[in-house]
Image (cartoon, rainbow, N blue to C red; front, top):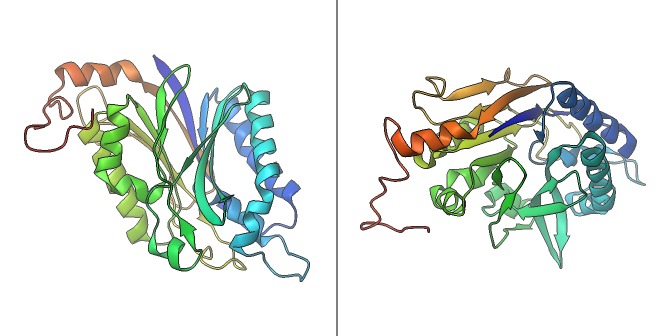
Length: 285
């Protein structure tokens, strides 16, 4: 089974209306559609661009106001997923859950289904500056061509959670990310690649580029999209199926061949999932 995926290096810049945001999103979707993509990944915190729309006082909006756009965000991505007949991981969007704010990845299916996966590990900035809370459960999602999981940015730095979704049958992890410096970017990138080797699965990741000068904590972005695979003979030697140009406004596209995963799991140069020492440490099955 093969699936074609695109990952968007989403360019953040100040806008003055939701319509401007919608037009930019559709531009990337239409581009992915021209390449025949079936799954499209947007980055974490892409909707912070909406905070740059001036409020009644003429200033940028606060993080507490971002959930006010939730209905419009969901309707936009539902309509695009249906019109272009593709699965869209709409990056992450900040939603309200009672009195809490959650940073949540959203999966939009062509049939109108919307699935939500809150981020499970919250960075110090998200806690202290934006008063966010962590999600409390992980789910894998069945799609026609692959069982997938959505783990956001910092989540990929925790091997345990990836073991869990692999044990639940995930073959592809979509990892939306947002980092503002090289150190943060490479933490996520190196961990994402390690997870492909440990669990013999694909990771599709991407990040924000550009800047939002009026939005606190979004003034700098350092990002790159990549499709990563285990380092074994059927895959590229460096385990990089495709990657973008750092900090450029662009998308990358690649085909994921799940049969290659199944092959290396059964008779690869190494079989890291099979060879776990569950007599010594936790078995996540």
